[in-house]
Amino acid sequence: MKKIIPFIVAFGLVMTAHAQKDETAVKYAETITVEDLTDDLTILASDALEGRETGERGQKMAAAYIREHFKSLGLEAPVSIEGGRSFYQSVPLYTNVPGETFLTVGDKNYENFGDVVHIGSGGTKTNEGLEVIYGGDGSEEATADLKVAGKAVMIEAQGMRSWRASAERLKEEGAALLLILNAPSDEVFATMAVQLKGYLSGGRLSIDKPEDSSNDNLEVFFVSPSTAANILNLNLEQLPELKEGSIKKIKSKKIGYSVSSVLKTVESENVLGFLEGTDKKDEIIVLTAHFDHVGVNDGKVYNGADDDGSGTSAILEIAEAFVTAKNEGHGPRRSILFMTVTGEEKGLLGSGYYVANPVFPLANTVVDLNIDMIGRVDPEHKDNPNYVYVVGSDKLSTELHIISESTNSTYTQMDLDYTYNDQNHPDRIYYRSDHWNFAKNNIPVIFYFNGVHEDYHQASDTVDKINFEMLAKRAQLVFFTAWELANRDGRIKVDITPESGSN
Image (cartoon, rainbow, N blue to C red; front, side, top):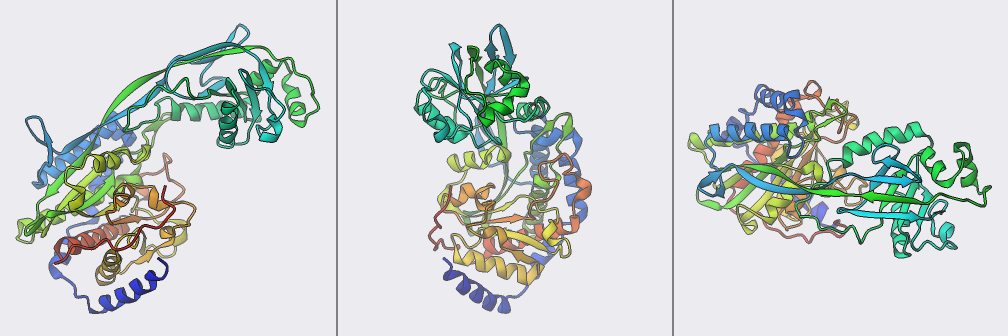
């Protein structure tokens, strides 16, 4: 792959030198304005839309706004439904929502999200009379001499993820329950419990119906320091001594637990608008952005202005530009599918559902141009906001990368930053937005992104912080690129073998 890049860049520069502006394209790109983007985003990222949580009222209000925009433009509703056509592609999602769950120590029940937090499988499960043994930091060395089969094991772990390897090993050895002490104080644990409640109480959404695996998995409870001390028959002040190894014998209390969950179906939807092409109408250019965000947490609305109200607003205005062009006799040769997807924040669910249930054959899908966060300037570019991160353009198609470079050089002259395009970049951005579901189906993609900023996934991601001039310019770059891909004679070829390392 590395040997190909210099050739691509060199060839792209040669093409760029001879590229001529299409004044017709310029005319319609100029209809993508700061004013219109501001109007769209002010609505999509308003408090009234309640953070657009997947499947919730605010997300459905956003879907209705997008649908009405597509409808007003005269785009076709492409989804077949009983009795007609729809702009909505229904996306059924499933989740296991925690039911009554508690840990019992003696005659006291510790309720979930109070002094304990349950992390575990779906279904219903109870156990009682369990002996508790202390397993240090949970490492193989610390638990090597312990007979864990049928017992509850308490370990101390740093952070939220370091315990998973221990859990897998202890499960294989027959442990009945894992207790994790990972907070230095009850106050820290209380804060953690509130955060986890917001994350876990809604359940984890999936496009696949979860099976009841409650009998297969090791149940896990995080416990507060005072709860741990009670279980181990120690004073709170003795816990540090336990970790240091100065307490050799522990006479713990026997414990039990009860966990339950309820399967819940969440109805959500992708919103699709279709613009039919002319002589190459069976080939489809797809433009995507996700319109969901993370909802309301602790009474605060997470508006998601940049993530991804900015991309959604761009889709709306790019669609309007193409429709205006078609109405004036300059419609695209290839068809264009404008698609705002749901559930990106929950694991790329809406786009995943689409590629598994495509409205148009994936074999006819030429490219996906995906827009996720294009309204801000990240710290690395504070002195030069005229940029956009480009990811994926060179992963599957030599021609696509050349077209991307040439289009930018001809029309928008931004700095195209390929930092996140690096296969070895720790953030692995290529795999983290909706384009990935197309790429893993061997469909070329470009992902447009402004980078991460301090308001990412915070209640402070609000409209007043958007750089609308750059939002408009980046949206115009996507328009120009789509224009070229929709109107060129030949369909771009897939001629690059995907790199290893995909997830």
